Image (tube, rainbow, N blue to C red; front, top):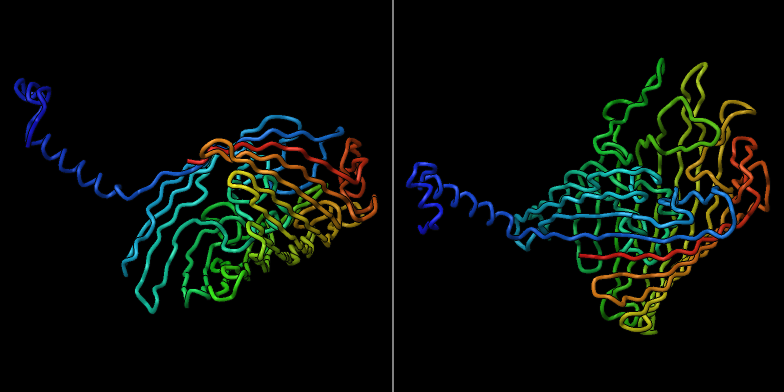
Length: 421
């Protein structure tokens, strides 16, 4: 083994041992061998947003809190991963560190840093091979992603907002053929926080058993290569069922309990078309949170549910220019707790019916940079009923537990710049 002159000089005065240096070099070499297949990736996500009009009562979709009329650091994502190879007993891992002023998955307006994903990937050679994930990972259902650069639009849909985002548990994925694959899994809860257990915790009441778990499943169907222009199109379906301590949100107060059992259903599709560069998409998401009777003297959690239907269109006009659109309708059935003066609860908490239209123009002028302009319109379809919706605008009074504005329309104009590495 060769040593540099500085190492030899230190050894001559007894400061170091050449044997120890040799051993350290060998250890470093083995470590470098272990991480040689690890990849570093991620992105820096920034935005500028203008909201015409006055007031702060904005639509309650994910990652929309505190971003109005200003400049935003939305997210910084740093990802270390080793993908599995093609061997029968392959293994890998993922560590996804996600931080930002407004894009923290744990809270639509929180500032902080979290480990969004951290899991071990394993393959067992059963049939075509079963791929496992063990740890903390993104939900297996939903049309949109927490990663903004992977979505066709900058702002998120209400359908994305309704679903759980991260799970702590284990999933198994089996690819029956090139056309059919399925994933099933079990998790602690449907909460955003890792390692959360399914306890109720309200004083003096019963709680779900410690073994109460969340169950998830999804199936993907892909059109074969000989199906003409729709080849490669996909149909997705899946479900979540389990405890979610953040399942029911409220206006005018919070329940005494800490959540409810939740069931979520999802169906989605992506469709290629005969027009070059034109793709269509659609999704349906449904969330039902069950009622919780917490006992005498406590505010019970009522049953609520919400449905969301969305349609997507994307057109790759040139190598750098693409255009994306989304139209969705949300309708939500809220419930009141605690008598006539009690708060209303629901998965979204906003107008009972909402129409939202979003248009996005993306032009990738710089290498590795995603740049887009977006305009979004949210419209209260309830017709301005003061007993139900959360109006947009500046009024700020409270009627039956809802913060009221003066408008039934909310507009957003945003610019989004993302560097991906």
